[in-house]
Image 1 (cartoon, one colour):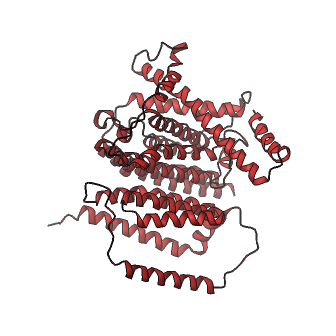
Image 2 (image 1 turned 45 degrees about the vertical axis):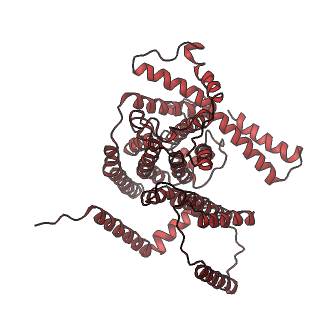
Image 3 (image 1 turned 180 degrees about the horizontal axis):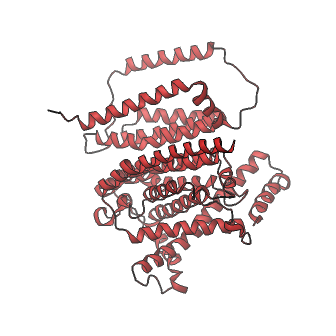
Length: 349
Length: 161
């Protein structure tokens, strides 16, 4: 599975030696190619994920789900894409037009930026920043803004309430998410994602950091606006929340960004808690990249399971749960982890 | 590269001040902060850049919500009000620019030829929790007191009879 790394290396080599470009120019082109690959990766995952979501949702609710086009309805979504592309792009007359147009693009850009630091296998990462996980959290915090932009610029009360709820929810749940990751960072002793994966060769962090894993799981469901925390787009009360007014391709971009975020947070969960590309129990017959993807899909399955099983909770319960339960528990987890590391060092030395 | 970033940052800052719509102003403020973060990246201070984006650009969302909640108008078009004293404001800002430029010009900046450090986070942590431990903790306590004060003002203290 080193094939991707070799292709990337060969491309850079060809740009520098074959085309006679400078180092900076070839790096720029390689980054652009990588961004294209990331978009393709998101789109391929999107097709699988939407099919999975529809089929699983149907399964949990004892329905059939899509079953007409292709094997088990697999071609339903590609046909939907064509439908969405052909739809009219409606912009409300009273909307704040430039912001309305930019908002969906901003949402997609933050999603792609998040993929820049995710290592899919050893060396398969665009920029192995030494502040990797911190970068991910920082980029995630700006995602709120694009949803708020969409909500306010639509000039529609439902969109507006959806945008306000998004801010309240995402800002509140960002804190326990960051704190739950901090316990892992303390154990690994590094913010670099590849270092964190290497630190889990013998034991995955999900075992010593089980509480942090559960907090991260709950907080990311709220961060990605998925059920049972999908208050920002609660269909029964807000039509569709912040993207009520969007149609056609602009709506589709929001949709892609949402599923891209889902893949990104599942990847981070895999890296931080489930050992990244390390094979479990020494089963190394599958390549690391495949192991990574299997774990990511297990995480996504759990997200979908929760979404289709639990009913939506009320907004004040959501805020109480975040501030009065998750944050104290995550802070306690950090303290216990710190004491644990200290005691462990005293025993081993 | 520096000049592109400088023009980007200052241009969006100017647009932020001049804009009549408070919503657009806040969004231009995000662009300004991202420009400053890019400056930090150019100075090899990647941790600072991430903090800049997380704390400032991310918090703009809250800022926006407050801005909108405190706005008393039905339409967003004329929400950023201007004071009438343009001449005085211009004079004060000109004086500030001149004083700042004079001080920057006359300071002997320390120039180091050493390589920028690779592990910025570790060094910041060592300094903050080692040498500058006491100021760091004092700042933390100050913030905690401010937080408690805000909660008490917002919630009101129950009178015990």
